[in-house]
Image 1 (cartoon, rainbow, N blue to C red):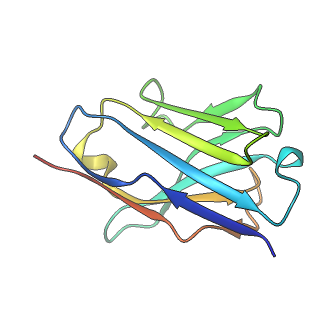
Image 2: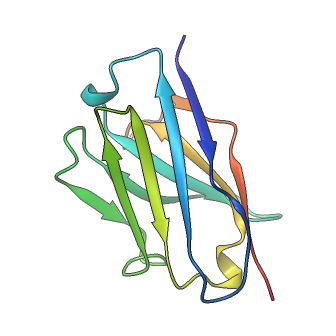
Image 3: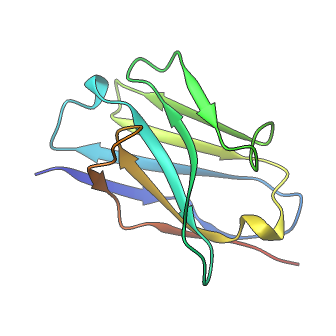
Length: 116
């Protein structure tokens, strides 16, 4: 059974940092690209970032480019999202998902709230 479990969310002040993690199981993690997607309150899903299976190629939405960094540790079956210089508009539920263009499995999400 494919499982994706996010952690690391919380409340942070504007300008602060958080690191999200996504623990994967039930599939060969190192064979799949992975993505982060978020959903702000009352809004639709927004793709945030993706990384290829080996970790050597990454892509970002313009809204987070230069502030967020996606990475992965294939030995630990874990995906990360380092978020710096956080803004109130980054407040959302953050989901990790398997794939890059087609996302076939999703985690349950972790809440990130940026507020003073």
